[in-house]
Length: 605
Image (cartoon, rainbow, N blue to C red; front, side, top):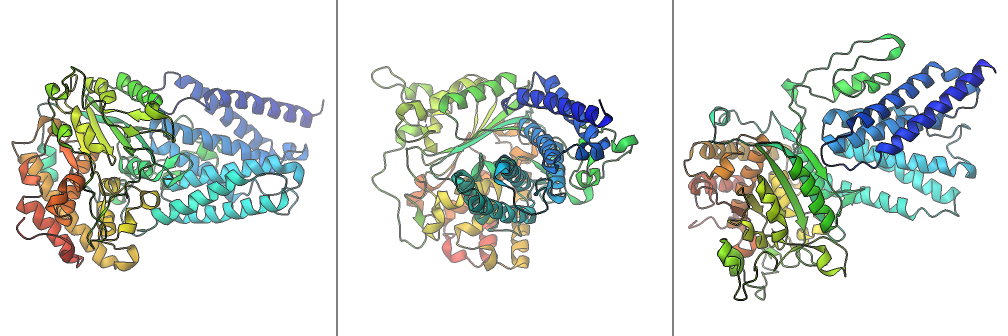
């Protein structure tokens, strides 16, 4: 047997072995703490060995008939593994590693035609599907990394590739891929509406306010909880999404991560070894060093803490959602809190824009709505009707499911009660969110922190209220408050000069800093909020909730407050309520700066 034959057989054996290990971990759920981490170590090790072998024997393998797309497929699998690890752990380094491998595939044109022309023959349709999957995965990674220009480039190439496939493989249905093209175009249209604004991720330069930092540093509650785990999901008809990431969960995912930033940036040391392999400094493998470790170093900030672990689940059934919550709750470390973000309608097929408040007066709140007084009774005894049955826990719900499946798709407030045995930070974004007031006072061990959205959105231009086009207003306020304010009053990025927008950010930052001091020094702050105030992510959500509530209270007439104002339970202290001068004046300064004061009701507030 010739030396080339030995090399080829060894390579094929390595491919088969790596593929078997890949299949074993591919479908491991992206939630819960991994008890089989050694499997992931084995599959990474197998692919690193395979990658190194093909590098060392590239000329012999090519002479024996190795195609460039086969090299690309190996790199794509490694990128897929890294992305899967990111989704399971939320560790940014894994996301960066995935990007590095995908970038190498693109720059080296591994999936381009081996004959020198752009097109493949019909016999290579399987390769074209591999290339389509590569582009879709690279798009998702680039989207999460906020590589806007890269997303735009990939979207253009992806669309051209789908068009080319349709032209050359007329007997094959590419409908699903055409839908993917439409998805990314729709997502980019919304996501780039405010291209020049600050990142959604937590920036140590932009979100740590110097004036209030000493107060935050000194603040210490009787009990301090760590925020390490979150569950994020949304389920709306025809909502903006790409792959299995909806616009609302994308915004929340970004909001709960650290942004590599400026003066905190430090390059990771890279120590070369023989054969082009690099010493591992932080992960399962230094695989990216084989391709471009410098790119990975340029995109990471090792000085930052780890991101909270996030389980992002796409359109779950109610039973699956409860199972994931139970898994996270069961594995929650002591003195830790779980954040649960649920975005869904309270009725099948209902849109949040169905009853929108317009400052122009073209639409008003419906007067035929069901009374909410029963939902405002928080004590356990108030949840018992005259038949001795539970009331309030199971009367209203969030809808997680397609049309026609009845109660199987209903998530009731009572379904959440078992999870209140552990600390819970619950964010409900729904046109039926206030139904979850029933949780307050009936927890089974720990008082839950509740942020509940308005029942109806409010906009200057009613067309902006279309959730299927722009996402949820409440989630937008929690993740990009100034952009949400601009959307509320009908501004777009093209309407606002960069300097004006930057000054508006400064006004908002100063207000948040002042409110932080109030929260850290007031004696009336409930322990539920005090025990999470030290966490930067949860503190920022609380501040943005205060801003959202104040803005909407001044934008909507008082008679519509029940429908158009968010609710927090337990109640936050009066000094940060919309009635306080420090909050009112901040919103007034922002509105005046943007010349939209006339849209608000600041008199006699």
